[in-house]
Image 1 (cartoon, helix red, strand yellow):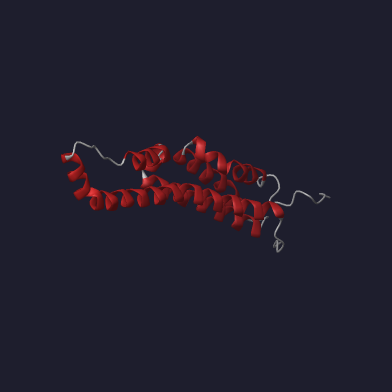
Image 2: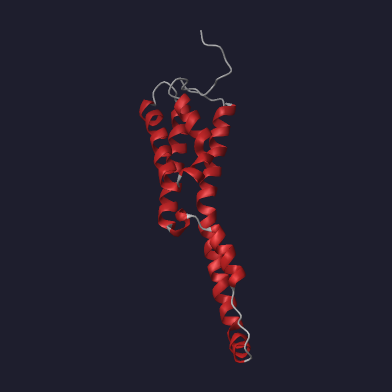
Length: 155
């Protein structure tokens, strides 16, 4: 039996997975942009910092360093780990969508989807992994209700 309707729970699951991928991949991209910005401004300010150093003034880019220091939890220092976590999030979401399209036959996808999400949460860290908590709860509830349709009565 094929489930052709899109339930609100499935739409919420897909939105939460997309949000989880954005939360994982966006900080390393922003951090890379800030590192590039720091390097460009470092080169542009170099002649003036030499002249200011001769005059006795010390100039450094401490404000940009403080922005970068406040942005970087431990996960952002490992962009490969962030990409692997995003891949696990996407695989978990894909398994959930595939399991929902054929709710009676897709037992393996329904079982594997929460495992991928838990591995992604462990790779991301618990603080960022809280974004994926609703998706994990929906994937676990899909084990009991394969159609992800919680609002209809069972006969």
